[in-house]
Amino acid sequence: MTTPPDPIQAQLIAARRNQILDAATKVFADKGFHPTTIKDIARTAGIADGTIYNYFENKTALMLGIFDRLNETDRRAEDLSQFTTGDFRAFMRTYLRHRLTFLQNDNFEVLRVVIAECMVNKELRELFNQQILAPTFAVAEEYFQQWAAQHIVKPINISLTMRAISGMVLGLIVERLMGDQPLEAQWDELPAFLTDLIMDGLL
Image (cartoon, rainbow, N blue to C red; front, side, top):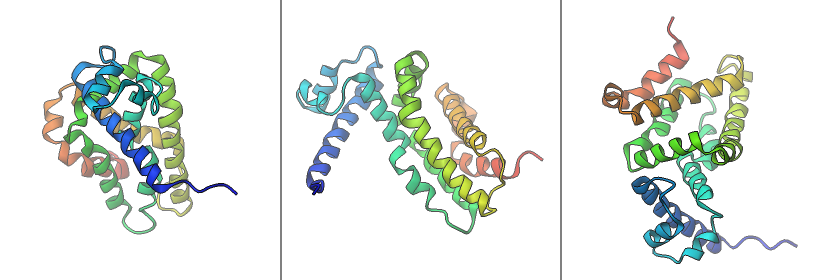
């Protein structure tokens, strides 16, 4: 018989991973990806260099861990399952607000580093697609297919719909990272505006 996982041990592992990711987030944001060393991250986390390798294979794995946490990949199904019936517009507004709010805190600088590194690092880009992007789209498509079957949303190309919405959000994030002041000034209005744009269109 398989021994059930020890919940206390699982909590300790999760806490240590988060401690390391917190340190990596700070150092990557301060120094950038390439100048940062495992020693820098270990020093910031207050642990031995070797301890990091018990949880993350290398800096690329750390960067993926940071993006996975920002993306909340493991919570995406839970977030989408919050809507069963009712006001889909209100649900979309809340969901988009949640996805956009993380830019209001210390994640801003590290996100700049993550996106920049993904553009030039082929290994990171491929792993990002496999481990984060593909699972995220798979979950979203499953829920949107259910909603289409229930006539909550239109039965249009679900795969492209997901990527169009994701691309819109990511594009706005990149524009803000590039210093778009009018966008930054109206950032809090985006969830409601995007929801209306997605659901009503321009005409």
